[in-house]
Length: 402
Image 1: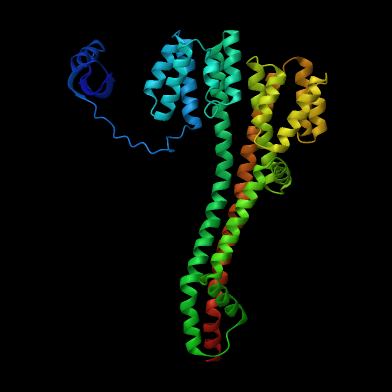
Image 2: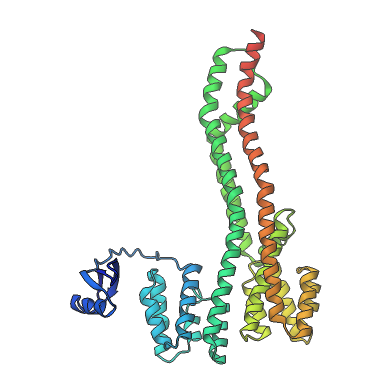
């Protein structure tokens, strides 16, 4: 159905603008009048120029899925049929790739598949957690409630990820600035000073000679080999991390790191407890929920601990005992989970733990930022100051001798 851009006056005389779909301009005028507007202009919306490059498509991000889930929950709660909800949401989404995915899901549902089965055909968009919770909601007849929980869970997960990224962006930016500034000084500024000192004659201070030699090295072809070696090392580490044992060893190192280790552990605990608590409160069986928690842990050490816990539970043990044996989860978390099991309110207890650790992550990120800010500024100032002092030492020496 074609779309039309319109302009109209409301009953109060206010000018309104928008876009609507209609069979013809006359139908668009009629629709606007029924809505209480006095249309003054209705024009066909220009078609967008689309260039399709093979292998490239608009990325579907977490925010797109959160908005879709929240709107879908509202529509289901209002009593709209499932297929109609998908049709409306597929047509209004701004992300064209996501719109095509929603249309494919709608076609599968119309063909007789359940909503969860249709979602399961798109694992890159909807993960196991999403599909299993929707399946539980369909079986229990509480799909709107499950979708509302899902959107709330995803919003909190996005906020947690944003906090961690924010903690990483600042130091990375400062380090990048330091590298660029020192690189420019070494490659473009120091050689001019070196030429000047050569013309002046005399013996240069050791610090100055060292900086000039570093400058010559960075401006030479040898520096390209150093950069190539660093890139190769990065690629080798990345490949090693993609292996099962490599990821396990490196994730264990990350968890034991002196500054970032505690933060990574808190993020992992918050994610695990939030995911498990949300799934249990939605009616997903414990063993299935633990399977999904392991797959979405994001840390191989935590994943192995969750798998070990799941295997122990399948043999008849409680969840708290094997969690404690893994040594990954703090004693307070294990004790609170034990209390939740004993009182029959494990899902509520897990959500309380997740809320607590979300606040702990906030505090840790703030402390990390406040600790690193002066250290990075000292590093940046020290690096630039070292180069400047080395270049001015000969001038000070000449002034003293003169």
